[in-house]
Figure (cartoon, each protein chain N blue to C red):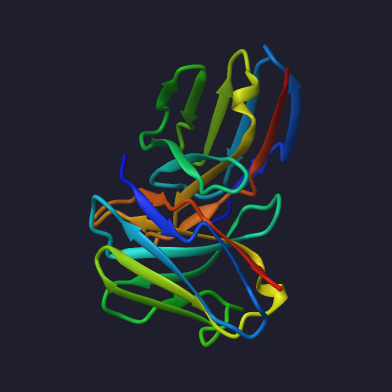
Amino acid sequence: TQLLEQSPQFLSIQEGENLTVYCNSSSVFSSLQWYRQEPGEGPVLLVTVVTGGEVKKLKRLTFQFGDARKDSSLHITAAQPGDTGLYLCAGPMDSNYQLIWGAGTKLIIKP
Amino acid sequence: GAVVSQHPSRVICKSGTSVKIECRSLDFQATTMFWYRQFPKQSLMLMATSNEGSKATYEQGVEKDKFLINHASLTLSTLTVTSAHPEDSSFYICSALIVAGTEAFFGQGTRLTVV
């Protein structure tokens, strides 16, 4: 069974600090996606990583796909209150296009 | 990026009535759409996979007669919550998979409150 374990589940830090969110699995994924969701809205796709070892940057957000394609991380540099939200990782199942979801990381950035 | 429109964004209905939620892919065709339910502070829970022109595939524990899904075209899927009860109150989200793609794009979600 493919599972995605996301950690931490909750993180509250001060503005300007750095943080990393992890998404781990014992299974290999063809790709992993990161979403951000704000209260009362649907998730918004931030990035898709496909190649093992791949690093993608989105302004202050850095996404990395593990060499073995079993894990991914999201690093935020100099976090800002606008980064507050629920961050979700997801990956497609082997057999179909259904997504397996991590439990999510609730991130709060305090001014 | 691709746009998925979900309507309505909020709905309040009385117990026993039915509510229909629409999910439209605005600028792409989607052979597959997914319906999720999300409880407060939790991740998304897949309810069913909707394939255009065929019956939806429901996840274990999801009542197909209660949550009717229709995917009549490549750009529209609907979820009807029949005989709604207060415990059906939740945030429902759809996503659409681009044809031959592995990226799914999400609607804005529908907050259903059954009173």
